[in-house]
Length: 106
Image (tube, rainbow, N blue to C red; front, side, top):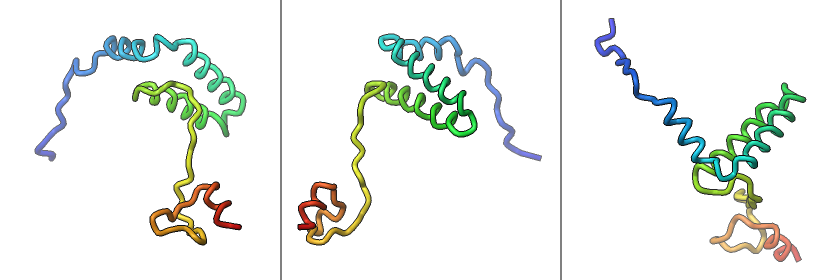
């Protein structure tokens, strides 16, 4: 049938090591992550059909930010990266921020 059967190895994942790494990741901001998780589950549970996915994504987003060395919950500024041609914009700056759009209008 299949000349290369999958190899099954035991003991590769150590559950206690995973728990220790997770605790080390959030222990200095435990109550913050506890609150984020609690609020996410409560809001997601109240409107489970619509909001459980986005709430869990937000909780995991905070945990991933912490994993990559950023704060768990900070205000981030998202900038528009759309490529909308603006009258008077140079070829180097084709995507315009709201400030440059206002200055190019008048």
